[in-house]
Length: 382
Image 1 (tube, rainbow, N blue to C red):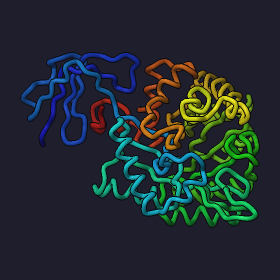
Image 2 (spheres, rainbow, N blue to C red):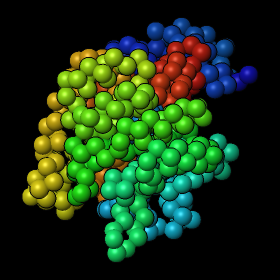
Image 3 (cartoon, rainbow, N blue to C red):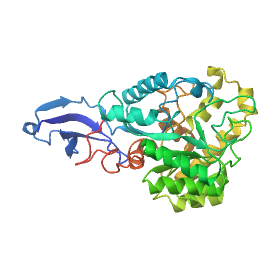
Image 4 (cartoon, one colour):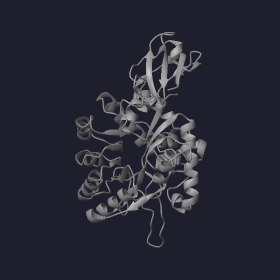
């Protein structure tokens, strides 16, 4: 089997804080050997030798909260107006862009339409289009008046939400998404500042609705991700064994205790990019400070920072990914999350990089194989 020897590289292996000079031998698509010094791996073991000239070698990154079918829109309702054929092509362009920016894995947090995520995942796996390995998601399942319900009394408007009310409808929708072949099911438990009738601290879902949805998903072997900004929604998500809980901005002490109690079973993700860009860089995108203040986004910004300082202290597993794909959060900015973790949440640089690599790989279901540079792991490298 042909082997490639990467010599004269500075290795950050995803497990240790410090990088070190070394070399890596690759056979097929696996790492055969890792040396912590230069010229330790015999040249004759390789059919090709690449001199890294001291450059940084690290594991490929994982987007833990990714919306590849969010295609530069300004409002949620715009997603419903894009024809599915065009929407699929625009999504294909986004996954190619993500791969080119170093993201070799994406955990889809929700598809903007049924089947887009599944179609893109399968096209990548079949070699029809370039893109990262991908766990495909359902649309965001929501309730009437929840995040993703753009309908009004006088007009029907589609968005990224699949509306279901009551446990019976929740079971039906979950089963339909399982039938579609998704890997992840997404449910919105709380509202959001971008929904005038259901702000972030409003919990729009009832307990029996969440129980029904998660039960069906897990019975079909699917992972469940949840939008949960209110403290109550975080507690509901933990109690019903949601696998990945997004946001958690307003988690109180009880909610944080619950998150800590399941830190070896579940993941969280702040999805901070949208909040950051609306508050720190809003003027650049025509999003005024006055508008951000009227939507209470500065309050949310402070709450998120405080929450994730505490989440870091408690050793809860956190993934990067920040609602990129809006006009104010262009796709391609995704790696900025690593810097946000350091600047706003108190992470050391190596800790933040692990969130983007080793921990993201665990969310993808490939812990030990991805997100690390070690013997036997996949040669998924930047």
